[in-house]
Structure formats: structure tokens, C-alpha cells
Image 1 (cartoon, helix red, strand yellow):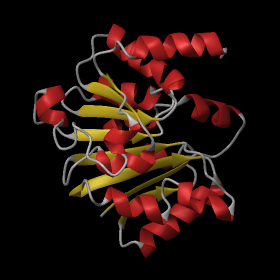
Image 2 (cartoon, rainbow, N blue to C red):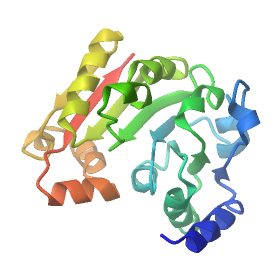
Image 3 (cartoon, helix red, strand yellow):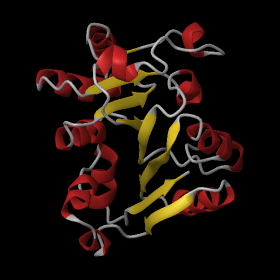
Image 4 (tube, rainbow, N blue to C red):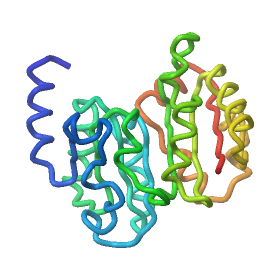
Length: 228
């Protein structure tokens, strides 16, 4: 995508009523104005709140919001030019149960309050495979401890990835950090998905841009679900 096109997307996003872009000083060692208030101040309901972290183009957030009109969804990413796609699509469809938040995941504690979130989806994140990159992994110690601060006790975290290292690493973190593993498979579409109920199959068959690419290359798709 050219620089001019990116700037056009950034400018258009600023006018979207369901797109939020906090300034650095609003989230760095501070509490964002929407923290603990997403249901009351934006969605205007008390429905469950679901986050997609590093949402990219927002395909999963939009897909989930379509399936579950009775839930609220927020796609979070720092790359606004990518997020524009999901924000634009959902706006054109008139969807009222989805929002997009442009910020770094590092500041997520500043944006959500205790027990505010019911579910988290992590779909095809960068595995950050080098040792020095561990602090950037979305299921690494720094992040997986943060999630407990705003995820409800009966909430859950979903992970989809094609990366063997990241899948195994996350399994280790789940055990080390005291999470309860509810579901795991290293080959989701190799028959495992057929053992699930129809609604869960529908959810897991949503594919992001990157999942489509990896699946077409023959990569096995891994899936985990765990809770505090």
C-alpha cells in the first residue's frame, strides 16, 4: 500500500464513529477515558465484551460480530491502515456491536478495567521467535499476566496460529501462569474441528488474511482455548 493511500485511510478512520485512537499521553502511565466504560458510553448495553488483539484487517472481529449480534467486539491494533478495512466494512454494514481501537497492545491495561472483558482472541500474531523478542509475544509472561487484570474469572482466551514454536510456547505459558487449558489441537482442520458443536465450527472457520495464505501453503492450523 502506497504512502498516499495509507494517509487517506488514516484520515478517513478519524471520522469513523466506532474508531478510537488515544494519544500517547492518554494511555502511557494513564487511564484512557473509555477504561471501564465501553459498554455504558459506547455500546449502550450490558452485553459481553470480546477483544481481538493485533486484529490486522479486522476480519475476525467483523466475522464474530456478524455471528454474535448479542455481543460487543473491539479489534485492537497499532496499524491503522490495515484496521481501516474492518472498520470500513463494519460501518458500511451498519454494525452497532463493533469498535476498533488503534493503540499498542502494551497499553491495554490503560484501556480496560477489572472484569470488563469476557473473551480475548489472538489470531495469527507475529510469533517473535528470537529469544530477545519474548517480551513482544502476545502470550509471553508480560502480556499473559496483564490479561488477568481485566479478563473475567470465567472468561477465556483463544489462540489461532500456524507457528509450531508459538503454539508450544503458549502451552508452556498457560501451565506456568496457572491458566486452565480447555481446548488444544495442533491440526484444527485435520478432523478436530468436526468434533466441535456447529456454532464453534462456524466461529473457527472464520479466516484472517494470513490464515488463508498459510492454509493455502499447506500449513497446519493450531488452536488453543484457556482461562484464568
